[in-house]
Length: 60
Image 1 (spheres, rainbow, N blue to C red):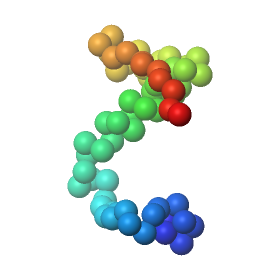
Image 2: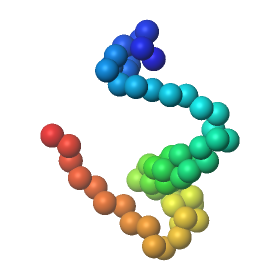
Image 3: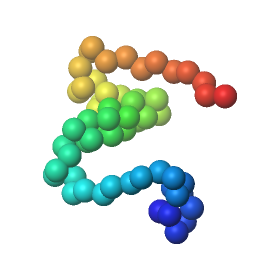
């Protein structure tokens, strides 16, 4: 990623196998389900449970 200039040289990045950090999967799963729900495919969002809500805001 540094070769592609996708990551700043000041940012420290450490790579690990996914099995060593399973909690990282949770935000990816929720973000993917929310993205699909926004596109009209609500199946996975509904499977996450009724407690979750999507809150939208703009970044300027």
